[in-house]
Figure 1 (cartoon, one colour):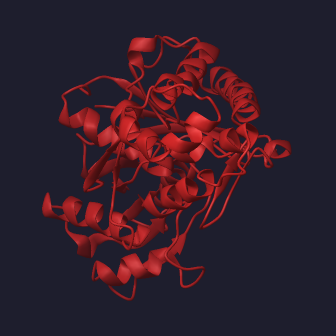
Figure 2 (figure 1 turned 30 degrees about the horizontal axis):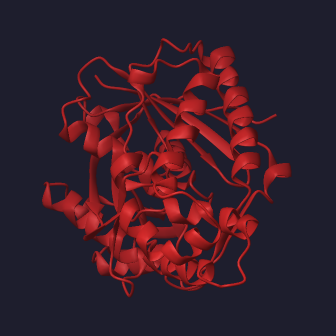
Length: 342
């Protein structure tokens, strides 16, 4: 049986985010779909009312996802972290520039990182970034690394444009519309974190422990590629919430967690319904969940580090707090990580 890790030597020593250049409101998105929505007799305001998403950010269509990661990492280095200390790069994006080479190699090259740096891609749908933090921490805890750069970048615009074109098919049925509905929630952004030795950064957020669970029987509930994403939204929600509940129970058992243990929750966010159901299943105080979906939509693996950085910028995170970094990825997989602010 796999042992869930405790960490004693690892901290998040630097972080930054990048926002899509253009804003797209849910109202404007519905205007682009007005003809099909009228034909299917779907009410105006459906997207915002069902998801709680007022808008999302987008990059230009021809921008590769790696560029969002690169921009976020450059902002991190601009804040003062020495890029020459990096020995590992993990790219955790869902979107990809190509099937090969790896996104991480492109990012490593663009950032001017040396030949001694080990770089690779990690894929776990919307959970990838938390998995990247865990693997980086395990490397540091074992003495096989010092500083790992974990990045994610998503450009949802090409997928969104393909989805709009698909939904405008005059033969489209209501069922087909809602099978593609989740694609309309997607937003774009980039995020970067450096994980390093806590002893050299005593004031940096400390990684404490992590728990994970999976439900591979649900891997059919969301399927996507470069051009489309189809989702059984109801089935995915029910299966995801059940998995999250089981994962949190594991944390309660192994690490003595409780719903009251965390001051703030930084989680992957799909929509208002998903976030509320997630919190209710875990018994969390709704006020403890930092939400970004109303203005940024579903940014996939970018959401957790992006929200973390935004929360710091807004002064929501302070000394002595316990944070829960939590996410559910299609597949299904779930991970939850405890972070302490010293």
